[in-house]
Amino acid sequence: MKNVVNNEKIGEIVYEESFWTGSKKLSVNGTPLEKTDKREFKTADGVSVFVKGNFLTGVKLNFGGEDITVTPTVKWYEIVMAVLPFILIMVWGNTVALCKIVPVVGGAIGGAVSGVFAVLSLFLMRSVKPVWLKILIGLAVTAATFGVCCGLGYAIVGIIS
Image 1 (spheres, rainbow, N blue to C red):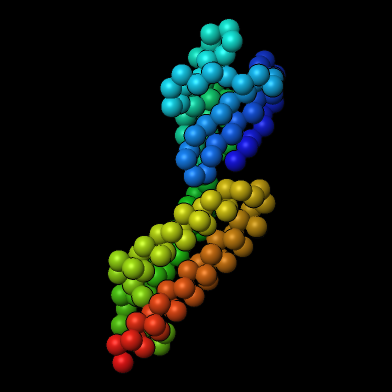
Image 2: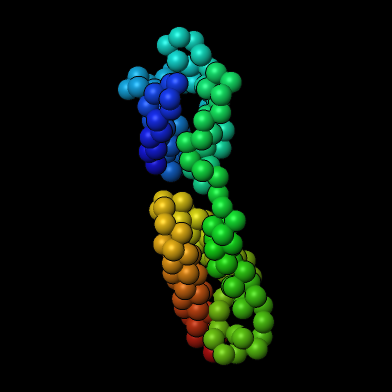
């Protein structure tokens, strides 16, 4: 993910973070900063820049004592929408009456599947700006989670029967 922030004092700040490795790159006014630690960079002038957070939780830079927000912190509705698939599968998969209607895999398998979808949901919601689109993504990922766990549930019932 690449974010560009314009600051009055410092200028253009470009922050890049790899989704897979979590490695970070930082440049100010087109000049890349030297990485001295996992979360610390130095400018050509020797000023230390500390990175707090990551793409999913929100990124802030401590640039010479001044905090600069690069990506906003995660909002409460994003957390709720991201956890919704996990809660749905854990409740449905552990309720016998609901599983008689539609068998859904629960337990460790359902928890793992819904946990992966929950992180995917949060990542996708953080990638877009409009709130209505974030809610739509959350609901779509919840439906996809239910569909996958339902398919696994029917497969397990078919193997057992």
